[in-house]
Image (cartoon, rainbow over all chains, first blue to last red; front, side):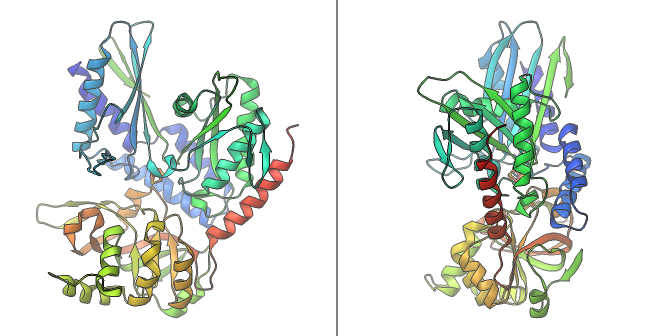
Length: 293
Length: 209
Ligand code: SF4
């Protein structure tokens, strides 16, 4: 597995310093929707200049390089124990090279480990076996500010000052809009919403992050959810919170929804809020060749 | 975009309103949790005795902060072979953690501007009216860009707090911020929150078609 270490370090470098093209494009479109000279316009301009500078200098886009979350899709017969080990080595080395800020803190002693390693959950690694002989590693860096404004609703609930949100898509819409209004600019808006309907409290947060790997302009395969995604994005933008909460036309760049089976007794709506620094990258390893997306 | 020079005069402070995007040039000082707590305990509530170089640092800060600006930032700083410091990443950190201290520190040192992100509460807003002063919101996450507006690092105090927590004295040029709390007692955060709550209410009363 040692041969995967350098390619994985490169995956981390790319994620931390080079914002994906679809996200940058969406930020540029947001800039066009704002009034030149306004606070919102200025914020987006600064964000875009920052994105270019980080790419050119290979420095972190944001100093909070977040929790590294890996989704590993491996061929049959690979040792996940060894994969975990090489990923951890790559994370520690990427931290040493300053692509990542040391972010892993022991919750009981308050000590920072200094190398972004902790227990089995830091970095977070999910494994899934797939057909064929290709290894795919998806990486997301999830910052703290936006993670703090994520939310989970157990429906039925009352939202937005007392309006009932029931166990249907309309209830989902109400809960998500409530979460966006509560977040204000605190999650470094404009954000991207990862929404999971159903599941249990744990599986739902997991799915709400996984769905954020879809591309910005990738429509939901389910037409009903595709329509809901567009509607929520459009209505969230009517809230007028704007970039950084300065007011403006873009509060949310996009919404991604997924559905999970649930217990008859539970109906969760789970929202992971991703800040504008939407850092996600993919590495594909096939026949000894590596490519990145 | 209006350019504002530090130190900032009372007239300039009073002429600025929430929602105004401005750029700052001049000398500012970074400070976050440890720095605020130390200032408060040692020189304002006198909970602890000054020790070591405390009084020297205090005298230096009094000059720098009179009419000056505090920046809530824990920077990533590199040092060149000749020992010079350079800011590598310098985005704002969440300001509300300094709410218990900020108003008193603004009054004590005559601080005209506090930069951070996320806004602050009623005590700071009250101090903005009295001093008078401003809360200035920087762009969260724009760490590389903001670091490159730092032209020179003039010095550092209390490095023993750790690099992110120390007082870094920096000279900036065209540092972009938006006024979100002003000397007239207005808070853009409160306004946007109230307005968006109203829109939300309307959106939620509409049924799915
Ligand atoms: S929310 Fe995102 S952009 Fe904002 S400070 Fe955290 S990681 Fe950076």
